Length: 233
Image: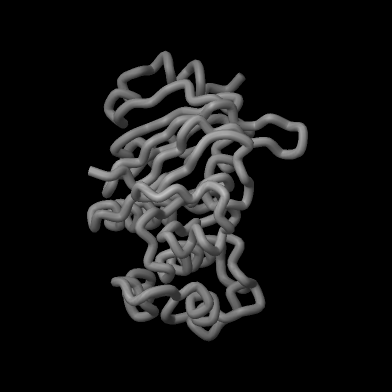
């Protein structure tokens, strides 16, 4: 089986700041990999490197066997990678419908009506400016916008951040259904309980290095790893 995503011996820098140090991660096809770590550990930098916003100084990123490191973000999207960014980053002056239209790519399973079926509140607000939506509605729009690209690999950066518990549960159900349909997902998440409920595999990054890899069950059973790498200083 070809792996959905391979991050191989990646070093990434912001200017002179060395953020990622020899990072190796693998996302199995159809699985959900939870990428955990404290704030500033390098999780979002990993996603930026995969998306091509940050070019690695060393190493390789491959999507379904094709090397994408060094390609432009647009070319990486064309290879089937989509991102739900931290902070949602919807286009605030565009309507809900317009936010979805601009992201549409390909003739896959995801189209406008399916997004509206998945998120009925977006259908109700399809003509409303995205910037006027609630935080939860904006998160639904950010997910829907990513799905409109019909990705094979979905990267999600802190999708539960700042949301009420009821909305977090709803977002969790959506992510679970996407995984059940066979979408390959990398989930960056501070909500440990949510991450472990959804994940097949888990990796922890600490100060730019991978310090734990294993299944979600192994992570849940390893209380020392949780305390060491995810506990409060």
